[in-house]
Image (cartoon, rainbow, N blue to C red; front, side, top):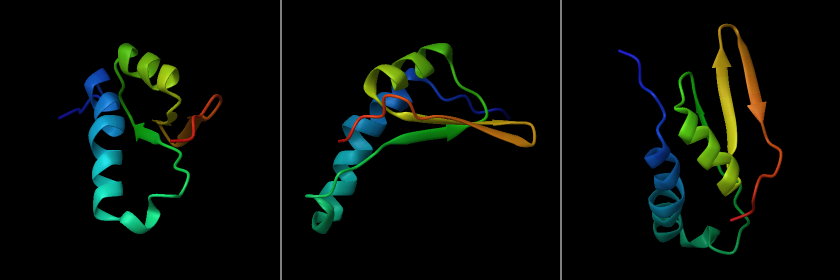
Length: 75
């Protein structure tokens, strides 16, 4: 079974997971946060959304790892 990272997953990282992290770890509320997504399969729209939102991308390509960190936003 292949799991594909979708555009909605990217949005959830910002809208839900970051908020949950801050809610349940209040001691980190004043820290700067850099977000990233990682996986083997991504929808094209997910990659576009991640870049637009300033989220880093980590892709597994066989036995290599490719990462895209330009324009990462601080949350």
